[in-house]
Image (cartoon, rainbow, N blue to C red; front, side, top):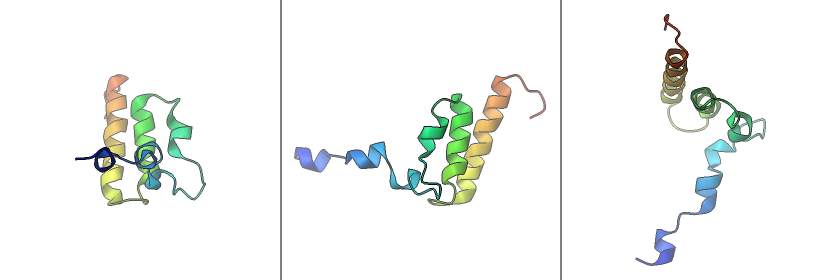
Length: 78
């Protein structure tokens, strides 16, 4: 296999199309990179929910990260 066959375009890694399609024109990482990991991931999944695949899966992932953050912070009523 040659180097060109193994090459993954940086654009697909650095700026995936579904991360740049939000109507605001803002890329999600610019908003969430300063947030706690679980909260940032929840927002990421909500942000892109209608931009790729099944939105229900992304909503479920967002809920999972929110619940994980609540447990991490010691919230009993999750």
